[in-house]
Image (cartoon, rainbow over all chains, first blue to last red):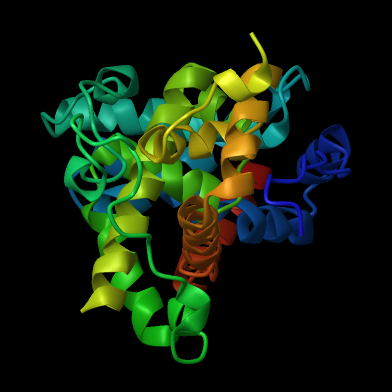
Amino acid sequence: MPIQAQQRVPPVVDDLDVVGRLRAGDERAFEALIEQLHPTMLAVPRAHVRTRASAEEVVQDAWVAVLKGLDRFEGRSSLKTWIMRIVANIAMTRGVREARSTPFSSLAAEGEEAAVDADRFRGPQDAFTGHWNAYPRDWSTLPEQAPLGRETLRALAHELEALPDAQRTVVALRDVYGCRSEEVCATLEISAANQRVLLHRGRSRLRAALERRFDD
Amino acid sequence: MTESDQHITCQEVVELVTDYLERALDADEASLFEEHLNFCDGCITYVEQMRVTVEAVGQIGETDVPADTREKLLTAFRDWQHA
């Protein structure tokens, strides 16, 4: 298996066709869109509002705004990105009301953050500076399927919740809900480089959390 | 300078892994990354741990829309149709 991600192919669903069906009152088209996007949309407001209930309200308001604004959709971005931008804007406005207003870009990657603690590597006096003191453990030797077991996944979900807002949002959109990096950048209005840093830090923290769990 | 004069450390690998997986490294950096993996079992394991982490995270999402939410949204859809 190649270790690099395969380039994902954009969905073949014709956005303008979906929009046409919505305008014509096709309830099943709307239901399908809800199934496809609602859980993903819920990952967006959490950086701006305090509670899950508030996030739910933001996304429901966003759906209404999507319907009202449907005539303005011209297909210049994908329907998904257009909808995600609406969620982000409503979340931001709502965040102002809840006095938790932070443009996403100001939550973005700041300072230094090591993926792995420096003391795991050989120090500057060593002939092999920067190399592992002791190799990480091979998880494939753990008791059956431990990384993907139910208890581990539950713990991992808590770790994801505990990530800093910007990291959690990016990791959730990319790795939980399978958004493409361009979709995440457009939704959150961050640069590709910034998105990668946040993804990297979030994933690295989650890996470290799994490692702590398996090494105990 | 020949290729063998350049190398990256394990500590650098763990910071480059996401850029590598995202195909955001330029060709030279990607070669250095891959050359390192050719001789470093520790980093092969590390990259595999990252891959497993991403795979695990992919399985924790709630993908079901609660029935009451769906009903609320469908009502909004009907209201919008008749507005």
